[in-house]
Amino acid sequence: MSITPAQQEALIQFHAITNSSDIEADRVLLERVDWDVQRAIQAKYDGEDIVEPPQPEQSSSSSRSPPETRTLEPLEVDDSLQGPNPPNGRKPALTILYPILNRVFAIISYPLTVSFSVFAFIFRLLRLPFPRFNTATLRFNFFGATPQIRPRRPPRPGNPADAAERWIRELEDETGAISVTRAAASASGVDTNAEETLRRRDKGEGRGRLLPDFWIGSYESALKVAQKDARPMCVILTCEEHDDTPEFKRSVLTDPDLVRVLTDNDFIVWGGDVRDSEAHQTSLKLSTTTFPFVGFIALHPRSGSRTSSGPSAPPQLCVLSRHEGSPTSLTSATTLHNHITNTLLPRITPILTRVKNEIRLRKQEQELIAQQDRAYKEAERRDREKVERRQAEERRKQEEEAERRRLEGEKVSMAKRREAWRLWKRSTLPAEPTTAEKAIRIVVRLPNGERLTKRFRPSESVEDLYAAVDVCFLPRDENAVAPTTPPAGYTHEYDFRLATSYPRKEIELSRDVLGDVGILKGGGNLVVEMLNIHGLEDDSGDSDEE
Image 1 (spheres, rainbow, N blue to C red):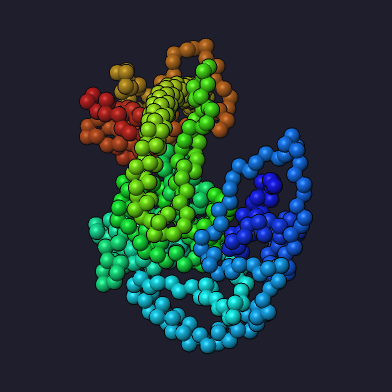
Image 2: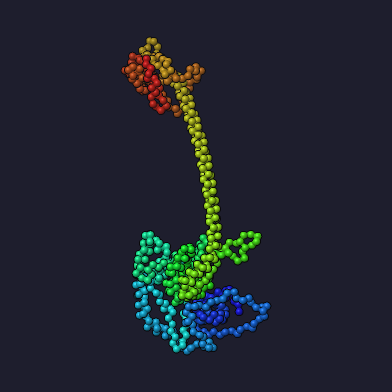
């Protein structure tokens, strides 16, 4: 009778939890509870009788369902604990005494359990290997009583990376070995913790043992890396409830030849215990019911993917081989090593080499495209900087031109206002005194070489002298109309100074009357010394003397 994939998955899950040896009875029980795994487990461990339903009559060959495509393998661990079913499905009478006897045994064995825990703690503290003692496998058979097997504990939830690290740490504690990478780091003096661990373990049976480099992460992340980098993958699943697990860890996972072949061929080694959620889900995906389990996964061409009209489809990850059972035969180190070297590697090496070459070519093409993109962006950056520099230069020139025009405008405006002020000042200067009046005669040599001779009253001020000289800088335009008032907001500054020629003495601008200036009381000869716009002296007039 065929079953659907969902029913088959339920049967596998029920079989993995109960460790039953009678698959047909498990199927009948699941059919009775409508394939509800939880109800089936409860019914099995509550001790309900299993009554087989009547077999349906064989239908004709035309309506017969297609045969099953997968055969379920019974568990090889703990099967001896399952006694034969009593006739007519009836249980022995002493079966009901099993819980009581089990409690009595637990009380009697309590000192042994405490001693075992103390020794295990001391050995782990010293980082020495110590065999695990699974008390869950202890069962008693009193007068043919067949005890019920306890269901497996539910998987421990948690982060896959944390679960992987915990499993690796427990593996190192049990085997006294260390991973290849940590051993190399300790040899180079990088990892001091690994060096201390090796030093402590040199005294135990784990001396010189190595473990493969296990993947720290989820099963899916390991698959992605195996597909992306075209690397073979080794999946290792264990179950602490199985008696073969300690021997498998000590003799198989630490085998030098096996570790070497896995390391040299760049295997991604992922492992875990089905007590953890990630490993439990992986065991369901791989339909694993027997432990320990070792599976090999690698890229493989798809069947029927090659066509005459086009290239073949890219390879996909496939489970190439499965090894389940006793570490002395099916999963022994020799068996696995021979399988890898003689069967697996010759099969996958050409495919992985081709895929790696394709990956390398794609990376080279991507790197070439990236280099071209970088060169294009660099050229674009240089062109943009060149344009920005040209624009900045143009803006600078425009700003300088605008500043020059502004200064010229201000200069022209200042010159016009100065000229207007001089016209106004010339119209307001007092007339020269008559010959009958007392006057002071002053001769002033202008910068252009001309001489200005002018008579001043002794009551006139030094500022009137400066104003009389300043108006001489006006152009000779007889038609110029003098304003009646000085320019609004304009403060006139004289851009020259007066001084005697010899001995040189400056005549400071002031409102003092000329009659009080000792050097000018009797008249005198003066020189005009021009000043620049910054107020510095212009020495051009110092070389000319009267």
